[in-house]
Amino acid sequence: MWSKRDSTRRLIYYVSRVEPTPTFFATITGDAIENLRSALDHLAYQLFLVGTNGTTGGRHVYFPIDRDIAEYRRNLPRRTRGMRQDAIDTLNAIEPYKGGKGHDLWVLHELNNLDKHRLLVTVGSAYQSFNVGAHMQPMMQKQALVAGLPLPPKIDVYLRPADNLCPLTVGDELFIDDVDAEENKGMDFRFNISLKEPGIVEGPLLDTVQQFCDLVSKTALLFKPCLS
Amino acid sequence: MIADERLALIQIKINRAKEHLDNLKRALRVFLDSKPNVVQAGFYAQADLLRV
Image 1 (cartoon, each protein chain N blue to C red):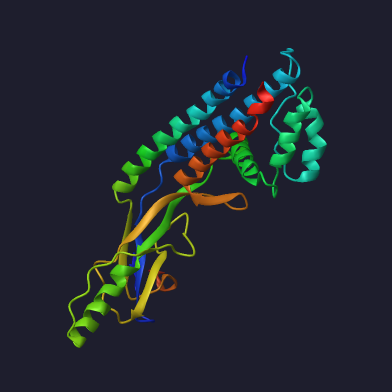
Image 2: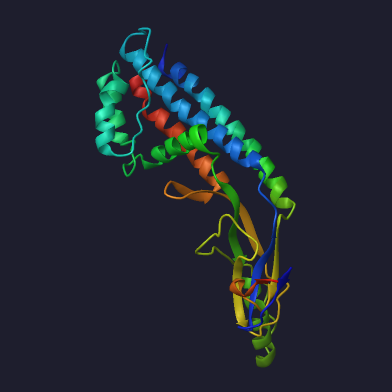
């Protein structure tokens, strides 16, 4: 049971119920990430086959993605043995390590390791936006009435909060109105499902997975000249 | 094997990821349409919520 302590008199819009996010979202995200990461390893293997004219073997071949440039340089010769120099040059240009041009490949790699070896990726409800137009509507109507002007049309303007509060929990405050403000039934709060792995990636789940799909497709195409 | 054939082999994995993404889109739509989060308004702050 919860009690209220009436102290600030500021009207607060807050979350009173949060439905748990189905585990399925995290497992299917992990599956998508794993397929994308292994697509890169398949790419590396094709580069090896081209470089060695179809020699068998290649168990040492991985698409190199590392924590920093030093680790990348250390591991590169072992992972790319047999590849042609143009393939290695293309890899170097991509900079597939944390902080490099290919930083997002490192993010994909880290999420894959997390999902495979430790935990499901963290997915939860998040605060996406609220309609500030709905908030301003009563004030604008009041002013129009005072000034004898026609009532302003309803305008929807959705603003993104600085903190998406992922994973959303009961009691999270979404908007703090004026002292003694009347509740505005037209206030509209929108939510999405986000991916949140501190230090790795935070963002809307669908957009993030879509970006990974695009990134891997684009990366594979960069190597097309090295595959013939 | 020409370059496009090799890329097609890699594309199989990417396409599988896209299938997962499509399934995820559908599942998320159903979940969000069910209005899983409820908002209320009140004259108190989160810090003032007291369990009694």
